[in-house]
Image 1 (tube, chains in turn cyan, yellow):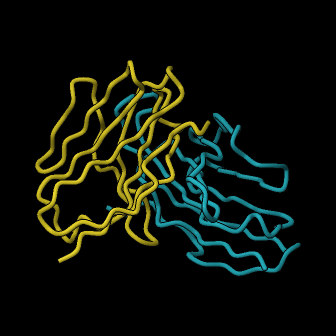
Image 2 (cartoon, one colour; image 1 turned 120 degrees about the vertical axis):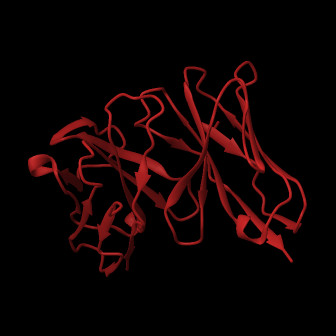
Length: 116
Length: 110
C-alpha cells in the first residue's frame, strides 16, 4: 500500500514567487494534516482537513498560505508570495478514524522549500 | 515556556549502552503521548505510544508521569540502527493536533 506522498520533494524559489505543494494521503484516509519545520525550530501543526472540510486551521501562519482539498482526496498548500522565513520542510500526514485517540498518523517524507 | 521540552542533546553512546530521553509538557489537558523517531531528512515515524501504566516494546520502554507532566524513553542495548532524532509528541486527545518537541539526536557508535 502506498504511503503519504508529497510533491515536489525539493523546491527552490525566489522571494515573491508562488509555490504549490501537493499531498496525496493514504487511500481511504479522511484526515489530512499539514505540518512544517522551519530551521532550528520544532515541527508545528498548520491545519487539519476531514475529507474536504477544514477542521482546524489555527496553525496557518498568515494569509499568504492557502490549503485546499477539493473532493476530499489530495491536498495542496500554496504559498503566495513566498518570503524568506517560509523556508523549511512541509510535512503532510494522514490518518483514518476521525477522533480515535490511539489512531496512528502517517507522515510523508516532506517537501523541502528554500526561498532565496 | 515551550509546550514540549526535551533534552537538547546530542547524545553519543557506544553500542550496547542504555540511553534515556526525558521530556516535559506544559499543557495539563494533554491526553495522548508518543515518541516518534526521525531519520536524517526523512519523515517522523511513530516509535511508540506512551500509556499511564508505562509500556515496553522490546528494548524500548516508555513512561508517563501525569502529575509531573513528564515522559521518558529508555533504550536498552542500543544498536547502530537506533541512531536518529527522537521526538517527544503530545496531543490534546483527539490525536490530530500533535505538538512536537525539538527532538534529541542520538548517535550510536561502534
